[in-house]
Length: 629
DNA sequence: CTAGGGTTAG
Image (tube, rainbow, N blue to C red; front, top):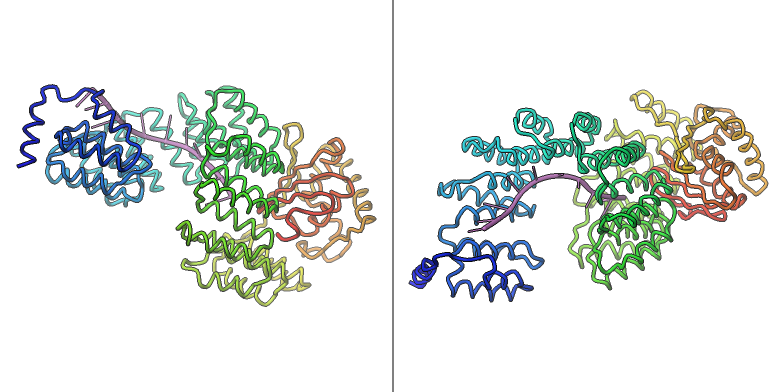
């Protein structure tokens, strides 16, 4: 009866509403759930809830604001007798944008099909495909696709692009490609989505090929390719594309610069990173938390941790959420500044910035690198109990690393055996690394056997095992493992180090003699060896070089490790006191680590070495990793 | 009286 009255009231509107109706602006100004409920009550008593526009405004508030309540929105939607197409689409869209709820998009879509009115339009399919790509199965997606075909909407440009995106999200880039190739109507978005699909799978060559074939490319096309190269570890190529973009392409935006900075960070290209920083300040680029995070990360990875911290505090930290915090906590952790990392986390709690899983990975890493077992255990607990973040395999990995470094090998193994997910090669590798540090051959052997199960791709772990044998003087066994690596077709990547000098990179391979300054370099190395020995340095022959049986030769070979060449090159070509920054593709060996400590003292230089795993900041004879790595 | 698509850390 009441509803009927309202319906009569509603039907009395001739021109229902204009966009500046008081109630609409009231709805838009709601700041809390209470206010929304009051407005909702007003909508009901005036009958306006039956009008699509206020109903949609209400639903948008309920699904898009910070105090969103999807269950309330669903109730509101359910009580609308015959929702119009707009209302359906609004609900489908809202669910599609909320990954854990995107199955609800499909529920609504199905109910729409069931009552056969209103008929879905092209917008409906864009949203439903989005939902499917965001977490539903292939089966559902293809069912929806059939409906689109039946309604003759599949060929609509927006629908097609949604479809390409859906397949790309599932990693079915070949199917995405098929849709792309078949569609008559293509635009820049179609190309960019497909390129993004290849990039998502790490198929950068395919992505590049498409990119080259585009008649015109916009800032997204360029940014996607740069991000793609960063993702597969081709930082030099990423920076090359970035420079080409500056020369002939569109103006970079904050996405481009975020990726370019990531490339600088991982390539330890401080000069270029600084240049981008200046570029950001001078151009109209709007700072956002991810750009800021990559800036902090760049300075940290280039060894400028103090400056990273300065950038963080200069940028009025209250405004930003978790990303910049994570970047700086991670930066402190990789520089062995565990106290600072922990203090920053505590500051973060005071500022009421919610941490996420990455925060805890950074924090646990800090504990691990600082040998702070008690604190690490505490934070691991806190993560689930106070923040409801379920530990993932990376967090368990941090714990294995933490306990392993501290020599609690048995306990570290128990973590692996008792965690709720299946262990992967990385986590066993962490334990094996700990066995190496603590020279526990027995356990190392056992873990090595487990690791063999993973086989093929895991050359690195076999190498670790071989190294462990040789450090313990068990050369024959080490030889056997290395033979097996050779037989299985795996070749150890040759060591390669590079150094940036005035924006140009100089690369050195093990025993490299190709550089123009080779002669000078090797003379310098000889002289350096004498100086280091006088200062008390004793070469270590434990690891690697098993095929060389004469100790003298081993020593020679060790002195030619790529990082030594790069460091020598840096010492020769920079003025005294300039920090030297090296990036190496493999882990730094313990002899080079030892030698570099001496170099930093004898030559009075700060030396930052980024190896495959972490950063070493050498200063005055000691290293930030405190010899745990 | 209106809605739609692409790029961002460990």
